[in-house]
Amino acid sequence: MTAVKIDGRLIASKVRDEVNVRVQALSKQGVVPGLAVVLAGDDPASQVYVRNKERMAGRVGINAQTIRLPETLEPSQLRETIHRLNADEAVDGILVQLPLPGHIDAALATSILNEIDPAKDVDGLHPLNLGRLLAGEPGFVACTPSGCMRLLKESDVICRGRRAVVIGRSTIVGKPMAHLLLAADATVTICHSRTQDLADRVREADIIIAAVGRPEFIKRDWVKPGAAVIDVGINRTADGKLVGDVAYDEVAEVAGAITPVPGGVGPMTIAYLLDNVTRAAARRANR
Ligand code: NAD
Image 1 (tube, rainbow, N blue to C red):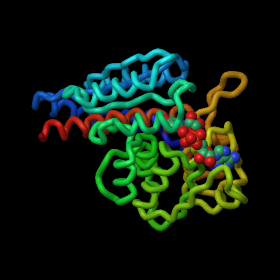
Image 2 (image 1 turned 60 degrees about the vertical axis):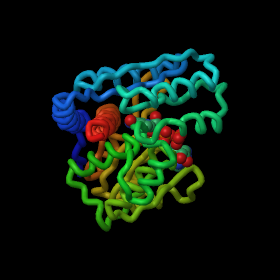
Image 3 (image 1 turned 180 degrees about the vertical axis):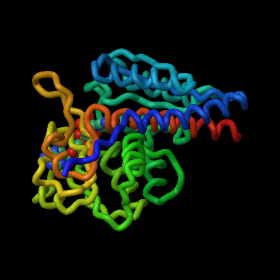
């Protein structure tokens, strides 16, 4: 069997078209959606991600600004920036690009990020939004898992009653992903670095979401024939090649559907960021 390749670029452009229609309607009401991205330091990958977010936001008519803070920033500078953006009426969504520079203590960083107004938390990382997801209430959901759900939907992958395995338990990908699959009536297993017999767990899955951060980690013989495989991982190999967490060529021989890297989940993450910003702006318009 040869898997159907799930075209994330194509599906993301469809999402952006939908967003664009909503942005146009908001503009007619005098509301231009605004996104503020806070970029601290000079991490090269973060610079690329932020540039892409800014570019894509511009394409759909969202007003995006990047606030650059120095690598050596004091935590208080980040806190003040967040407070200023919380109070800015023209800013609907605030995103702090991670990782923050290493000298900022992780617990302190989390407590500062939690000061983002939950109504502007377009990354879906605020405990209030995470709690809403858990409770099945409307709120902001992290962009990557939302994008993965849309990829499944557009590929006619049925979640109800099927077994899904999420590999990775981060707050930004693994955990919200598992809750979205649960809300779609899948039977969900979350695997992580301490999981025993990982290959056996993955082999049980009809739907596999790989969010590990290890190049070509998931092998062909871990995958049930016909399973849908969504590869969230972005890894750079020693020779500079971009690969996912799934050994694409060999897994594509057994899977039913599979996302490539690049061109799978990545474009969807940005598309759903734009979707979240537009939803935040719609709330402003309704106030
Ligand atoms: P993370 O490092 O926070 O989490 C990785 C998870 O993998 C952890 O929960 C850990 O328990 C698990 N893990 C590590 N080693 C394992 C092992 N040997 N067996 C089983 N589980 C193991 O990473 P993250 O932020 O969740 O990101 C995961 C990957 O997805 C990274 O490659 C990241 O670059 C990528 N990512 C891509 C997008 C996108 O838009 N495509 C967005 C976010 C993250």
